[in-house]
Length: 587
Image 1 (tube, rainbow, N blue to C red):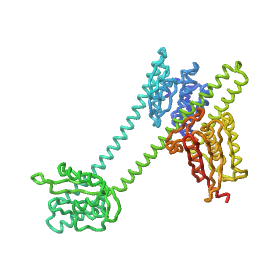
Image 2 (image 1 turned 90 degrees about the horizontal axis):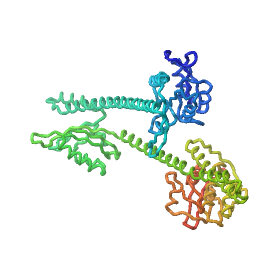
Image 3 (image 1 turned 135 degrees about the vertical axis):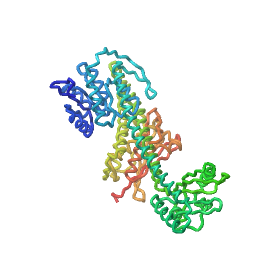
Image 4 (image 1 turned 180 degrees about the vertical axis):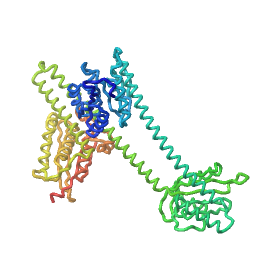
């Protein structure tokens, strides 16, 4: 590395932009070990300040960082004529084509995929440093239109940057592919070795069993050896005479079927009686095909004499006489219940993971779609004020201001719901119950939605008497009441009324309800409103927007209190949302 000319005193300065202290220190250790001078920034903004201060020879930046991400940092550096010459390497998982497009758009010089090994990292850094001063081609940027994930993108990049970045992308992909191939080859070798060992052992056992010993001593010795081998393999062996319908078995064979000792008789009919009804047809078909193919292999469920359900794996060879008639089957049976249970558990975990991913995707969809509408409304009103404020009358200014305030409140409530939902999913939301005055809480939330109710001439009636104490988390109860009252106002027609009531139930529970005489809901919608997996948000009586996330949040918070939430509704007759919370601390 000493043959490369760099900044003052031949010291190569490398700036690391990484918000993870652990990963930053690991990268610093590798670079300093190879005599690089390293400075570390914890985010994009700090990194940009350090670029101006330290004038590094090279910048290595993570992509996902707070305040300013890696793409934004790179774009800012490349747009500064004093710093544009500094090479920027982005650390990425390279999970899709959008990574490459974003890299081109921001002017990145190279990619390094995570996780990386030390040699791979150092080789890329050395290449970038060596090439830094070798290319003096006139850079002509061109606007290029590309299609990524079904969306058109316009990027501006010179040919050299595209060539270098795409080459590093190809190199990263090849590096990943080679690692995958090596892993696959290693797995294949392991599987082949295991399969070879099992096949060798099975062949040995078959040969042992196939030999007819002439003397009782030889037979006993052979049986002893076979028994020892079978015990080590944890499998039962069997030899079925198809002509006489008699079967020789090891003790392990019968134990797999729940018997404590060898039974006097065994044949295909007895075996089939143990196979569960839902598997019998498949097993029969496998046996019939084996008479032609001379190989038998299947897995099925059996019910043992001990009434336990087990999974078994059966392997056998079918022997034919000179007329090609099947006369004998020699094989093994193995209890694979534990393996099947493990596979089932993995399958259930995968389904659970898929469910979580689906819910996450839906949540992101809500964020992407439903944040846009209130933001657009908010921006539209601010544009009116910016462009026409001087020409508007006092009444018009008042109207715009009220609409602006309403839009801001809607946006604030949506952001509050999203924030609380994210805290719930991370387990970061604390549950801190205490004694609360329910009537006072309701009054505060009525005040929050008052402006919206006033504009629609809707009366908000708190029928909960003063000093009605409950025991709950104040923030969560506020969120529940706010969402239920907001929905009631949203879906209630002009001039109607909304009621909030409470009552103590006989089972030490308190029931709180919010009722309106609005547009109501169908039975199909009622089934879906509390599920994150179903997006059922629809417009209010005056076109108000809804995400449906608020009710999902209400359900989570009510369940945190040990209660339940439900709704009763009829189309055009209104809705009543009720929830219960435990009241044990007040008894």
